[in-house]
Length: 174
Image 1 (cartoon, one colour):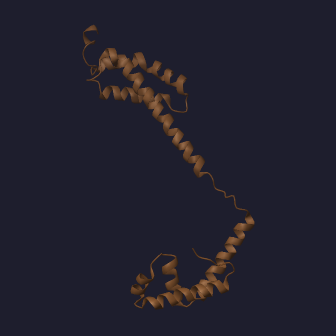
Image 2 (cartoon, one colour):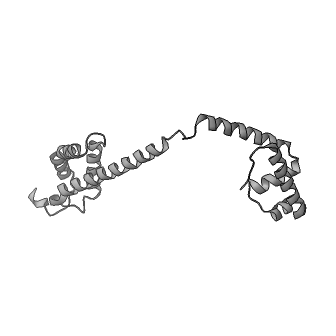
Image 3 (cartoon, helix red, strand yellow):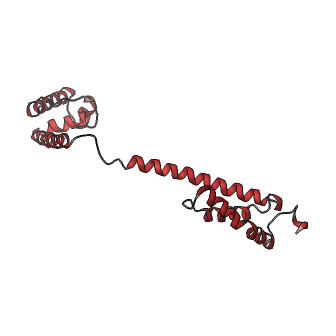
């Protein structure tokens, strides 16, 4: 064994010796430091896999340090990942609103009235109004789409707006 101190640890017997010597201690170190939830056994195994991948670069003297450093970094990465998961869960669990049920009911009723008022508009008025207010198209664009003049589009939008104001209380647009 003393001959291999300066060489790499790619020899299977030497690697097995390192594994047998450090595997349980590495697992225990991770378990005591981070607990069972972060799978210390898996992280220890991953550290040995990394050691095998880098066996030509790591000497026998540095093997223990390499294993503990890789395993500890893997656990720290897992802790960071769990924090992100926890933060996301706490943000996405908010399935409620601060609005009271009465407001939500009124909102739903108003939406139904709005849909009814839109249905009462002529097709030309509704098309021009929706293209302008929902899709955000300018009067000139709508005129080109519909094949009419800009003045006709303006008339259709404003007449639709007037009709909606008559049918719906407090109807305003931004």
